Length: 122
Image (cartoon, rainbow, N blue to C red; front, side, top):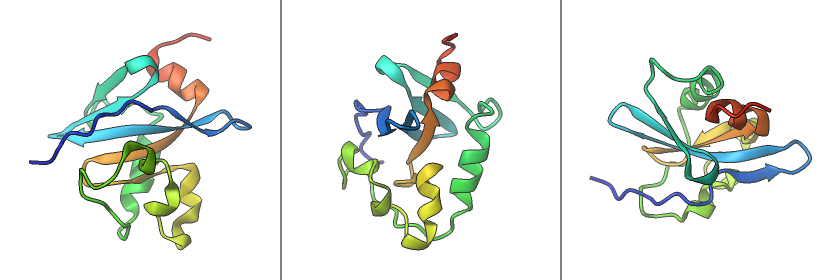
């Protein structure tokens, strides 16, 4: 059993110019937890996964070789540093997302995607 990391920074600015964010996502026992704004956590399964997440997660999971870390061996802020979790040849994933550990992912989402996932109408 691994330690459950406290997520408090997600979503974390990835690019002010493109209005994109690093967003933490945890996967435990068949349930995904996406850490959105102001403590909002969206939970879903593979069957109920939002359309905004499906292609990004499929691409991230297609990576067979990544430098995964064990839970408890990194700080949350470290998760948002792509070159710690992707090899140089996988650099294009810095705009999609990456897997941090067996349970943690980081997705790159736009403000519009985050608003839609939270049910915010803008």
